[in-house]
Amino acid sequence: MTQRLETAQIGPAIREAVAARLADFGFTANADLLERLGKFAMLLALWGSKLNLTASPNDPDATAFHIVDSLMPLILAAHPENIPLAGIFDQGVRVLDLGSGAGFPALILAAATHAHFTMLEARRKRASFLAVAASEMRLDNARVDSNYRADSDLEPSYDVVTARAFAEPVVAIRTASAALKPGGRLLLYLGASQQAEVVAAFASVPGFDPPETIAYELKRQNCAIAHLLVVARRVL
Image (cartoon, rainbow, N blue to C red):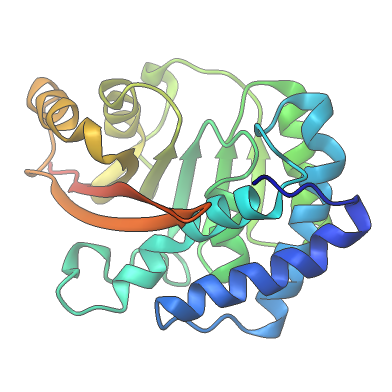
């Protein structure tokens, strides 16, 4: 059953829900991160219904799901077998997030790490939300770029490109190819059903090492949902 809360209740509910879900993965969120995530959730509730940012901006279960999903690269990087994720959001790393929308994953990862995030979002109202949220969350490592540009206008200056619910995988891969430095990594958040699609997409876009896939499951309303993180390194 979907639970909808008043805006003032959202922050505490999210802090509690996210802390519990992260603990299930053996990941501990400090008080500062939880405070920022609670602030984010309140802003999402305020802006969400007006801008259609998410389907259920006042539902703490849905928001907690998206937050924890955004954090999965950090959770999974703690396991030594997930070498492709090692150091992906270390301090000094420059990240371009494609179609940042409601802030998943860029605002959430920026709150949890010291990497520097550029959130590419051409829709002006959503870009305004992202800028306000970054300010209210006290994120000095996140900025919004609302200027639309073709892939050919992007410069290969980023260490990491992330994409979650951005576009078809082939579009994200082509954009990342233009934006990544040699040796930089593309990180795609995908549903488990997109495995074959993403393999075909990488086969059609030159310039990447073979992608590596990490599978995981998240609970939402007591259902286990299978997701994938796909990591591929840009070659010369």
